[in-house]
Length: 263
Length: 305
Image 1: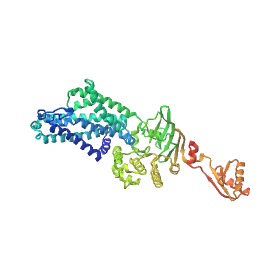
Image 2 (image 1 turned 180 degrees about the vertical axis):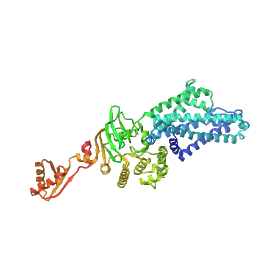
Image 3 (image 1 turned 45 degrees about the horizontal axis):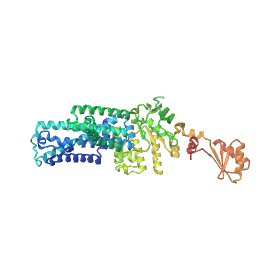
Image 4 (image 1 turned 45 degrees about the vertical axis):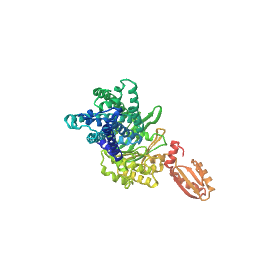
């Protein structure tokens, strides 16, 4: 497992992928957090779907986490793309046969790949948290938001919870990407179908079918990142999503274990 | 059959079907340790499929095989001693050649300190830091061979390793493979360059439409074919008489480009010489010729020249 992890990490750390992705993650977080503070007096809202997060909410001990948790969806999409492309490209490049000759235990190969990509995601979430917290403190005074409660023990606890929830949501997005990559064996197909489902189809279905959001994987992931929301409670989101992911992982594990590698 | 230490590869009734299509049918052959075995057959005859089964990449529909004494049902027990390049080189375009090898070295648990030596061994010593996507076909092929050598293998399985190489490159790879075999590495190699296979192989496995039509020593295969005696006379008019003499002695012949081609074993050449002399025919040239592997291949596989 350790050997697979090291090999996969060698691929992930190549500068264009590693720094490119981390810069994108920091950019997304900076944008979401900045808009939260700079657009606080805008009539169009300063958060997702035009919601307004006012000064009272931002000044609470949870205020420090709002920008960070608001970035979770976009961080998740980045993770989905990374997991899907890193998995499916083994088929398109034909490198899977090299990997399986050097590591014939297929489940070990999958697990090692997953762990290294999970570490990559962890780094991106840490960076995102750092950027969001730093910017929140930097912009609070300008937006006339009190940061007094952001340094309390309650704030630290909220931050830890948010960090765990965001990380879980990012890993969930990544797992979906990996499942799609293994099923479709093409990075473009895996990413486009994944993004289209999570961003477009789920949004439409949620709007037209009442209460459907509580069963949609993408919406459930967003609920987890927020620690539970109007779509689904935290426990419902966690258990339902775990069920979906367990089923998906089981299907692709069986396929990957037994499928002939003929490309 | 199992755990015979002197046998590197042993396949028994190895079969692979895709629906109704039979890719490999009851392939049975052995490859001795420390030898170079050529694996030949027309396109689509099942060579790559067989190699993939031996490497645990695809599951056989029926039959068994052992590699270095271990069943192919447990590739993890032998692949750490096997180097392979199947169906051309495949690497990550955005990584350098050396970094691609480091990925595989990490994965297999091999030292990354040997990589520069390996690159030099295959003639890529000064291009290891270049991105793989900038490599020519020949360089990609060399990198594939370097990757196959990473585990310091007991068995090398190479599928068309000389594709895209220039004549000098082909000669280098031939010498490299011969050196490896002399050092005890078993080499199982497929190639369309039959002259190369003939030069380096101790034994051959020949496939046609998924079936093994020959498995054994290369020399045995060539000797099984009808050898020819080529004769030229001082007076070309005598060739017709020479062919008639051979015919009377039970050997068929024909004249092609002022040369008589008479089917007969090497040992019959001096007899023909004496018969010609007795008939007053002076021979300018008399040479027994074994058919080449290429000629034998076309004859046995029925493939078009």
